[in-house]
Each structure stands twice: as structure tokens, then as C-alpha cells.
Figure (cartoon, rainbow, N blue to C red):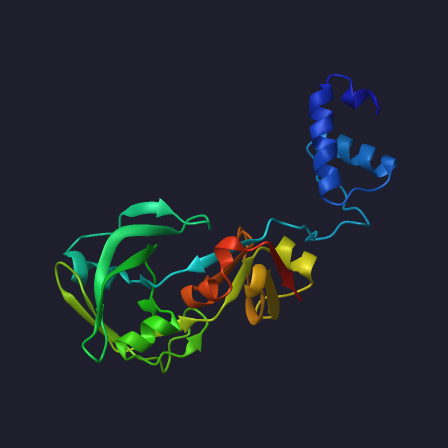
Length: 247
């Protein structure tokens, strides 16, 4: 490779070559030139085959997203006391998200209630309640199917915590079934953010194809489909034999 590489360990050279190949590869001559450039402290030349995002096939995880609540910092303090913050009970599949130890009572317009609804963290700019259709019927609420965060025109409810009460004027939704994925997974499936896909679940006599699965793409996101409790139970997700995400 030339005199500039004589004092470099084989392991270092191999590591650099692997990185260059991951970034697009190229001919043997171009790889050698790029190794020399890296060792000299220069930026390697881009390969003609290089791409910004390379498709990959990740393990597909399908999760049942049970009823839960997202809160603002202000609503956390109202419900649990001045200066209080959420405390982590367990991490969720997506990095940085967690189920909190804290729960609240949720009261609907029929004065019916759910005594203990889990809060998920971290906090958000707007408080939001996500229910299944069965939950909503029992509470006397008619929430629309919405993408998370799209709260205009949605109904509200009352939340009761150990330190206070929050009356939400809006924020109750049935979460649209959706799939989280990173840019590499989006490239593999040939989709972009806000596209729609299908999810086929084979589970004995309960096989179902879910349509209108909203694609949500973000950096650092793992491939994961979210169904609500009604949807997961309808297809007996726990005993699924085959799950396939379809464009």
C-alpha cells in the first residue's frame, strides 16, 4: 500500500477498510487510496457506488400499545405535586422512552372511570390520552383515530392524581396503527414518512391483514409496529405464527 502504511497495525487497516466498504466500497485501488487518505488525516474520496442510506432488513417487532397517557411538565406537577417529575418503571423498546411508575385516574363524561392509567415518558409539549375503542365506549368518549400529536378537534377528559386534577379540553385519541422505522428500514421497504403500509398477521384462525399502517420515519428509531389492545386481541398477536410488513 505504500511507505506511509508500514508502521500501521493490520487491525487498524482492516478496521478502516471495513468502514470504507460500509460507506459505499469501490474498486481495490480506490479503497487503498482512501485508506492512505484516512491515515494521513484527510477525508476519503466518495465512491461512485456510495449512497446516503443503504437498505437493511431489521427484525420486525409488533407491540400492543395499551391505554396510556403522555403529560406536559406542568400537568405532571399539577397531578403529583410541585417540583415532581416522572420516575422510570421500565424502558420501552424505543430508546429513550419509558413506562413511568406514576398512574392517574381517568374520568369520562358518563362519570365512568379507569382507576389506574399508566403514564409514559418523557414529557411532551401537549398532554395526550391514547385509548382503545373498547375503553372509549366504556367511558362515553368518541375519540377520532389520529396520528400521535394531532389533537385539534379531539375530545377531552378529566385526570385525577394524588395532588390535583387536570381537565383536558382536548387530547383523547385512538392512536392510528403505525410503524416506527429508521431511514435504513424505510429504504429497504421503499417507503417514506407518512406513507401507508399493510401488516399481515397469521395466527391460526385469526389471520388478519391490517391496512393503513402509518409510516413514521426517524433517525435512531427501531423497526416496530404499534397496534392497540383491541387490534392485538382480535388477531391473537401473542400466538402469531408469521408477521409480515407489506408496502
